[in-house]
Image (tube, rainbow, N blue to C red):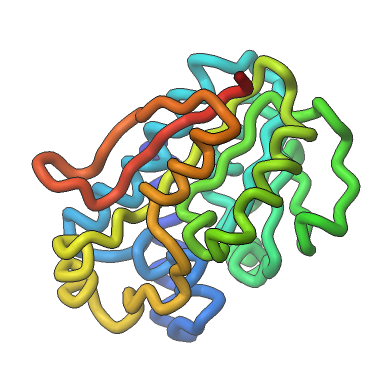
Length: 225
């Protein structure tokens, strides 16, 4: 992960210095991945490390992974280097297209732009689905529809790895110190509510809470009952 972090952090920083940010880049967390604050840096890169370690421990190389809401493609990049086949989906692949000017993504990543519900994914195809800081952008009332499709395209023994912000008072205070790119206006819900919806359909277990002693982010995994 260290080499991937160095590559992406340097090039994201360069990109933001050259052209600044916008709503798409902010939602893809580019300012967070390039932030100089050590706590923000730790949280955003640690999430990837925890998710990558879980996938590596539970899925064999050449497994099929869906990176749902892939953003910059940084997680896909790391997992592709580890020998996994990535389907990397986002509504807007602008961050990836901009970074492709400096970063050569591995060939075992298939980037797909579009609406999750209009794409025909094969049932029981993915060994794992990863949604890192994505589902909080979806209204809670719509989340069961996503879980229904996740269940269809996930293998019987597959896993879903999810992370997201708690949106508690400490998180909101930290957001103010982080800067104007961290308003969170586009967040519809919290990780605890997301976890509750998953618990109604899947077996769920916590992987980590960041950062001790404050829970600003939580990472959990889900598997079929």
